[in-house]
Image 1 (cartoon, helix red, strand yellow):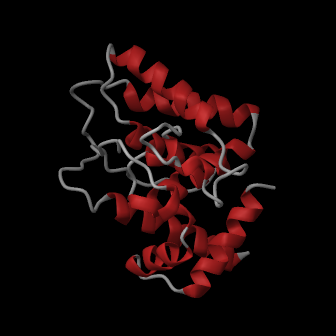
Image 2: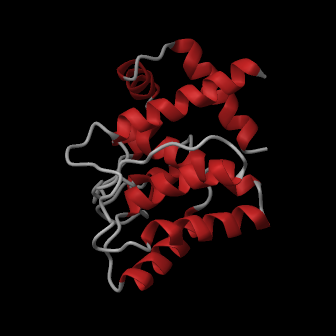
Image 3: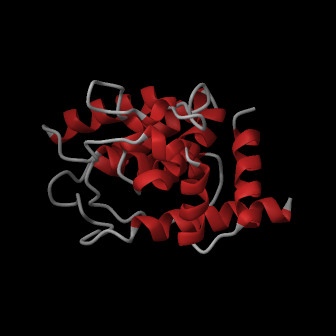
Length: 190
């Protein structure tokens, strides 16, 4: 159990560091333009997790899978079109990634409370992941905000084992970490 907790914390730190790789991120990015954005995300996440506890793990997993393809850019949320090769149907995500409807609900409520689309889906996904862990009585962490949403996705990159290994190595992780996080992904979906 201790090793699982350590690995979980390691993944959280890694996601936080990956999100800080983008310029001009700050924890108060939306304070002036929409101060109710983060409380709205928290409220929706708490309601959803109260109704279905497993959704908390699903939202964290969704954020993790988004960050590991091309960075934390919400590309995992993009649907298949003639010009978008959706990551939703990548082997690692197809029939296992869930919570898309929760992110859609949060986006609608945040846009309504802000009066217009202000908060990026990438930031919503990052904050929802953190808030879902907190709702499950896990640790909290500061989320750096100001990410931009991707307009492209890459199922090919999401499907590539070489790409997965390279992404882990960029984060200072090794093959054992890949095995461990893959196992945790399986546990989170059961």
